[in-house]
Image (tube, rainbow over all chains, first blue to last red; front, side):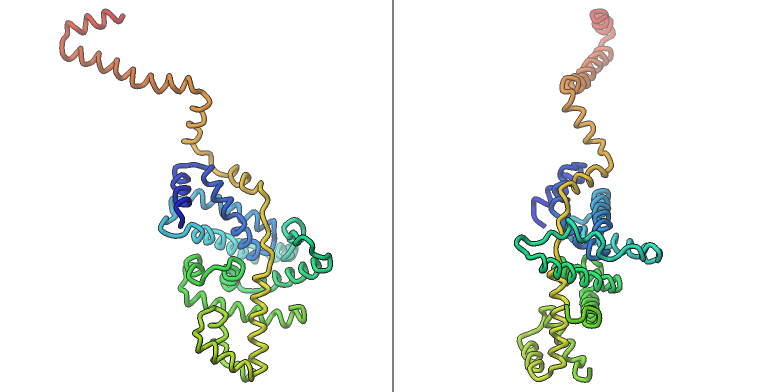
Length: 192
Length: 127
């Protein structure tokens, strides 16, 4: 962990909220990306991201400063997302009215400049399809796959975030990848 | 799926995890050159993860950070600090009054302990 981050955390431990704001700025989009791909809904992902940061602030004394701060923060975000998915699963009727990609279409998916409307359409469709496939993965494969392919983290970092051995991370990624492949060729058809 | 055997699937996984040796890569790619079924399987695996990688990374609005800060528990240490910078005169008086009162109390006690006569004199002067 870099020195500036260590200094920030020292300040946060003394109750400096401005120092905490700097950390939020640094990590908010990564935390949001994890939550978004885990739960598939932008509004819920934003709420979960807020919850993750508030929890990190309140539990800053539990953070082991010999480890990377992002590892600890991403663990909080992943666990909150998994808890959220479990709660949602227990409420089937609620799940039915929450489509996977709702809320993803507007300001959260800013198109590249100069992109043609047709390209935007195709990209939006592809993104929706991919998000739907992520949603179909069991929780434990989903978190490994999201951390690997959305956050581009190493297997070792993922193992620290999920608190499981590297070998188990590999197995989950392999199975997750295989499920994605199977589902994409049957559901996604020629698009994938 | 007779050809997509465990051996080649595990090699594919190693390659995709970027953990394959040069020799393992060679074994796999030589096989892929001759086996269409495995080639399709490998390309499908690669493509599915490529699609994940290409997903948009949406940005949160700037107001997000402020909204998080507003939900943090109020910090007492911070509150005292803010009060202090808002009332500098009162703060100075308060900070100075404490050691000064200690000095006064201390000197009176000392006098009293050392010499009863002086105590009468000092307290007489003061009142």
